[in-house]
Length: 151
Image (cartoon, rainbow, N blue to C red):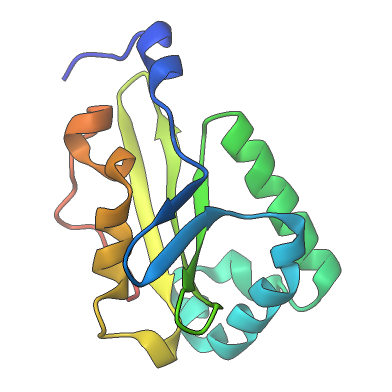
């Protein structure tokens, strides 16, 4: 696979918000901190296994720092992190991110988790399909069939 030029990399636009029939995927904002704390609290056991760093988010200040770091990584085009909200309830039910983006290779990891109450309902699949920029052909990143996810 060929390397992406800086010019081509800069042209790949990652939308900050994506809508599906049942979901809204959106780049985190500071006002999402309370929802992040609640999501982590309700799913701590699952997150310990797959997303250990998130288990340290116990209060609004910690969640706000997490959001600030995700904003910085987005602006640097290293990680694109979205909260996942179910439209019907207006509740945050998960997170999906393209992380460790190495545009020069090109390579990245896709990670996601869904709140335990909402698992096995197709929300993870819908989230992945919602953003065409996560697709292999769009960004030229090869898929890893051995990737693990908690959904």
